[in-house]
Image (tube, rainbow, N blue to C red; front, side, top):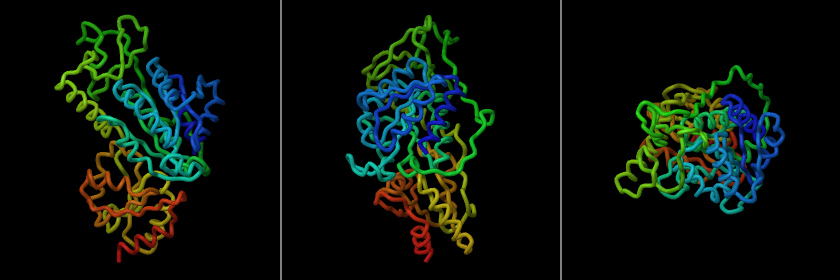
Length: 376
């Protein structure tokens, strides 16, 4: 999985015509990505093993400010240390891919065991109103597509993006047909190089229809500007302490992330009928167990369907309609119930959880028994 994820980042760098910069601090189970990317200097990739997690992410932010594709990789403890800098990237509205290979926690926890327990951290784990898109990988080979898509969203929507994988996926392996470059969707990136019709001077927070601000490489003539962590005045980007302006900017940053739902695919069912008795809704490494359990029950004539999420923030725009088509919703997770809280909050559905927190994956047999109990 980590190897495929590294290849996905390389492919995104090539298709966007941007040099990739990885700022990383070694941590189990994410270190393999640093090791893998360091082998590809011939593709213009720069890898920096920083002295700590904070230096790792801030170096990546600096690379993005300079016009590169900034990436940082870590696991849960490193995500905690990167929190302030993630907020900086949100305030700057700058591209950045933050890869979290989840492991058992809290604290040092179970470094070599798997867990899906960083979703709430990815959603809410920063100070202030700090929205950030979240993309999730489901299998080792899916790490390629998830990394590619996380990078596309980050570059085209000028926002940091969190990519979630976990130890089970990262160290897992499966047969995979390597994609051809021509078959990958384009990632078009345009730097602003001259003033627009509405500008007498450069306005770094003047937005397009997607609420995306322009990306300018420092040193571009006439495009001088400054960035920082203090609140920005709308449009001008000047420092602002005005109460009304802060509310406007908070709402804009949230709306920009919400608008990404219009630029991602609609949610599809992985298997089963469009309407039925039970929908098993999953994310991440529970994919194989859910798929196998549903397939076995469907052969027995059980009305069970499976949907698996890649886009967790924002959700695909049709997810609510899919959920409403089922009498019951089951959400299996390798945590104490995190996606289920978000689903209940947004869609007002009485979803049921199946949770396993032992550092090992959920099995097909466990899910079959759980679904049978729900139906009885």
